[in-house]
Image 1 (cartoon, helix red, strand yellow):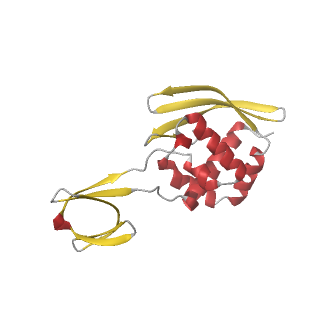
Image 2: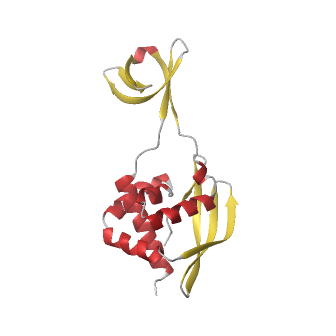
Image 3: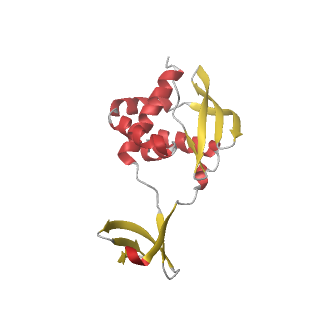
Length: 184
């Protein structure tokens, strides 16, 4: 019989390992405002000796810092698959069953993704074991509670005659609901 703690630890380990191995920052863009009040969207590639190298519309442009009034950073828009804690949990569950660790890690809060990826990269056998444990497991959301920028799902895990219920905690980041690793 596999305990809830074992499953939680395994899930955390898998998510951590995959995040480190597969995590890549989402699409981002910088907005460069020039002294003449015109603006340019682009990706900052390099800065050296007072010159910004910016990729914009498939081209690389060099801009001296003296011509720039400000640079602001824009986050990518929130993705629909993370619009509710329930959707995030379902994405996590499907990704785990499919063995898509990049998606598993993406379901966790940004501050945990690197740690999870690192842990997952060091425990390949644990990852395979966890994936086998999840096969044939039914997860049922029993309750959902949202309070400001945090949420909790009460989830029942059932495999065969075994079942247990626990809380899965979420936080909203950039308009997306992301899971937090289980706390011991």
